[in-house]
Figure 1 (cartoon, rainbow, N blue to C red):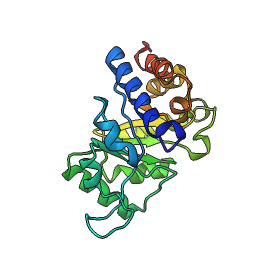
Figure 2 (cartoon, rainbow, N blue to C red):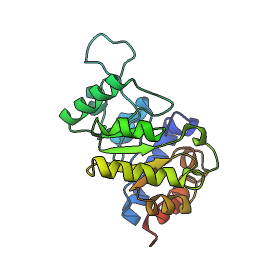
Figure 3 (cartoon, one colour):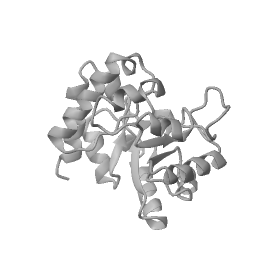
Figure 4 (cartoon, one colour):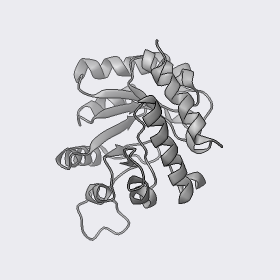
Length: 217
């Protein structure tokens, strides 16, 4: 959900309830990543799983402005998104947070912007690795159209090294066909932000995207 105007306050709840309804009607898992300021509000108002958009590699204590994983958990997070291209982490921070998330029983999705990054992320053993080329994020060209070969290579790379890690892809995902193509390439789903959050009708857009996940290949 990033920190778009529609991701704040009541509008965040409207999106969350749309996601909850779509998940109930289609059986497709929809995970929400609200802004930190909205995490408790959203997680306590919907049955849809909520994850933190990021976290800081610090312990609880004197760290002004930081978001430790324990704070995200207390606010209702069931998981955490790490190393997004808009919030990159150093490798030691990523390793620290991935390990602490396991201790706290939080799921993890680590974003990778290249095959080299995908390979490096396998070592921290996250729940998911999401391949997202940054130049396509927020645009109208889906990663599944622009770089299908690399998506498939990422899937094959992860499967060959650690088949317990699931692969996602994201960037430019706007249509049902983008989702169905992602699954055809071997991923288990997609990351999407502006395609839903900036939509005038998030429920209809989410239903469209969920249709891509349930469409027979």
